[in-house]
Image (cartoon, rainbow, N blue to C red):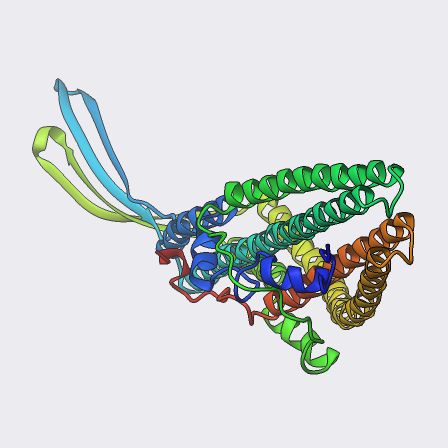
Length: 417
């Protein structure tokens, strides 16, 4: 039986490796999944709430105060009691400088909430990619073990036929059975792992479909230079935007608190009915609230927090640039690692086919066939892992540079459907 003739594990994988055609989630599904993720939903709700808070800050916290009083006036000569009453209406005044600082604070806090939503989208995108490529890797490993089980079945059939013809010792059957049992067990475990990976992905992002079509593409090095990638990441990084918006919001709060250290004027009108209605008074009054030491402490605290936020932003810039440079270099290196592993896997599979062919012709031992096949299997598994890792790293680069999915927000981001 020429059951091992022209059987290549790489060719089998090309036909059965389960991946989505573009090796990435469908863009429309991915966008819907990101917006439906719990972290994004929470950040979106917080952005909507902050929009209302900011509107309140723009309008100002000053409110009308209504007052009423009643009294009895006692007159000694002639002795008499006279009823008197009065009403008043007053309101603190918000001077233009303070109104301007309020508007600046409202805008800064709303921008910070928007940056937090963008960061939630970005982090959800990273989680989606991690879960997606974990499922992709497990799917490929399952396909490898399925192909290995098929080869083990064919090998067992070859061994059984040679034993019946008296060309191989009966001890070969035990070795072939052990190989087949091991391959079937590993296939069962791999099938369970891919099911668990799919469950984790769909539990976190139920809108992402797991359609399978085609084989994994060959990884290619990232386009452009590392410096250009670093600049793209820094231009679109939501973590940096969030830190910047926080520093701006704290500075705006410090300016608002500085403006509140001036006296607070108030203006009101009043009407009084006195002398049992024979006298009527209509007038205006002004109040002046003098600020205390607490306002100075509040301002100093806000200025300290703003300074600390700016220092943290400087440290964050350095870290992000370093990480972006390292990510780009890792993407380049992983492609070369996969190429080397792919060449090694091809060579090991060629050796395995040669050993199997020699055994069929009575020129080799089964132990040699099993040993070369085990090495070929390990080499193919490593090549697949490195292929998935290279593709995942490249996708991460595209995500961080905002070239993968739409992650940039506009002013109406909170109204996204």
